[in-house]
Image 1: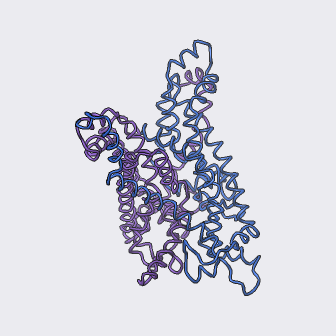
Image 2: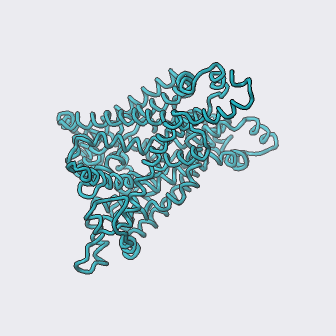
Length: 305
Length: 301
């Protein structure tokens, strides 16, 4: 109030006032937390490039004594199993996501279509599975009965609707599409098919993009289906391969056997971390592009409950 | 119903795949619950296996494992929910105060990064930190002259470690949701407060924070609904079959999994699973009921 009397001072003062101690605390704490979120990935990256001898000597370090590309040459030379798993993961992610998004968006349209009288009942039909979960034993029994054991389908089918949450996310979004649009389309003689494919699906692209990302991440990061239903190591998806690599040193030895000449120390620690880097590589590369859809999905889901 | 199908044949066709899927993977699981009361074997199936009454439950409820896994599940989830909310609240409020668009964008992205990683990848990070010989925490302890701790064989610290990891992985996601909630707040309110001479902290405390409570309580309620479900991917990914750490880290889900896969006794596993399903149902239903009473539009149903 006082400052507003003269024109020059407040401008300078405002600039000075802008950076208060409070601001300092805010910026520093955010920076620290952000660093904590990315540093572990850098650690893994650095360890993967560290010479095994210097890991054995000094342990993991952000500033290793000697760098080495050995781990990567090993992974790329003898990593047949890794790339097999890569293929499996890409396959199930693509096929699974496409199927899941189709099933979800189609069902969501029907649940949002106000001329369908049973949509309340149908909603409850889907909803009940969200509030009562029979657990893993019956789930496993159903998968067995359907023949979803130790084949590619067992990595795709059981994950098609991770939960009904995505379905309700899309339905809620479609509910927000104004009825007037629907009415005028109907007056113009549009049938259900036209309404679904010309109005509802195109208008829902933002939420469908988010749901696509949710499903894709779900498939890419899934190892539950593999742990429960897969025995054949040719069918291991990437995450499960990584899990096995950690728990079974044998697998690591197999990797090394093929390249080991007697007497050479085998870079087991750095190979582990190099495998992690190879695994998360695509996600890190796609991350700047993907995260805005993820944020959008969270915002749509979060605001609507 | 049939008339409705005639009227909207296409709509019913579109929902058919989802209906079949949910029927198979949702409703067809229900008959298998009876396994909990049987001495199940795969040859005889659920119709011909021997009925044993409550024997499977007796075994679990009489064993000390019952209290251990129940406590671990509820306690860990409770800590996860609490700490993630606190951290997410603090950081969303701070990010909202931070000016600099690029700074906000970049830091929000980095906070969200761990969320994109699977628990298996996270387990490697945990290993890189806490491995007894090469782990960076022990390297640090040695460098300051303290004696290294063999983390993977001492169950004590793992509750704290797990909470830290959960906060690390999940905070970013909730920060995004809270930031959206803050953005939804009418800016004229905080501007009016500013005109009335409120400081920034006062504006946060008396205007922004109270208006975030609905979003926070909905998220909290929804997570409390799932308090009886342990995070299998997290616990099994990080702890795996390391029995030494079970006293502080074994949750119902990992216990059921072991009963199922390792001992190969579906009846035992099903009995524990049924106990979890019923408790889980009570909590989900209860928390939703409260959410629907206290807030409008906050509940799932």
